[in-house]
Length: 333
Ligand code: SF4
Image (cartoon, rainbow, N blue to C red; front, top):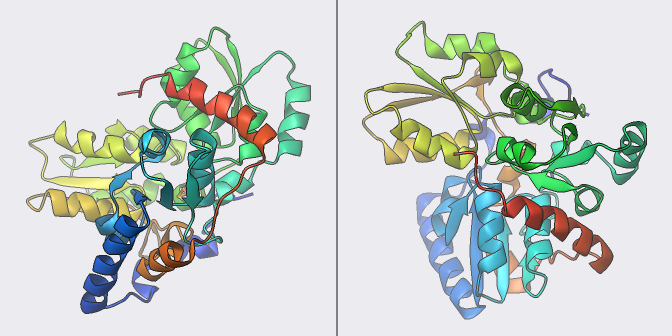
């Protein structure tokens, strides 16, 4: 399980990744768009995907938004540019579609931090508690849960429950954030974390802020408590776009989440300065799993129909119940 240290994979500077040159990007992008039309495919991309992958996607968003899109899409194939649990959620919500994940190694260490066995054991220790599971989890874990949540609706999901005793899994930082918003409920929190966000410390954010009190700090709730306490806004990746709009006078923002989202903010607001919170020794927050998918992988996925995601029907039904229950609850804001 990830612990707050500088997890090696997280510290890889994005610049270290080999990227195709601009001409090749244009050629691959055009080929991918043609293939998507020919193969009746919709391309969904998470906000943390490489910028050129976001560019060729039909829809870019956070886990919650992409789940809704996957459930409602008309095309026969969904190419999910994200990580494994996201493609799995698409298959769970829309089992009649062929769901492809362009790189099978695109996993998530937070999702791996809880297994069906550890959840069963935890539930036995807390009988009668309602299990709220972050979507960053396997289909099996979702099937054993009462309801799912994302970082965009976690507070609303917990408030919506007619019970005061909650088991929240697997992200401890998101769980603590929710517990602060809903103090009237007893929330027992599992000890998982996202290494990409958990590596960040308040001291790093303060340094990024450069002693300028006018700088607005926007943090993802997967960050540690000391970061959250400093933040002017705490929200999901998609919520960050709206958060920037709420501060029209501000010139500088420190963004405490994965760098790909910040790249997009810079393109949308060229008149403002966006600083990615510095994880450690000069490296921006970076999710190595999200960067496993590049244009070549997307092209191969469409050409060869790889890698198809399957979920056993009994597991799918249980996980679908938890996801659908979540989708009935509105976003936090
Ligand atoms: S950013 Fe964290 S939670 Fe999201 S996919 Fe990467 S490791 Fe998992």
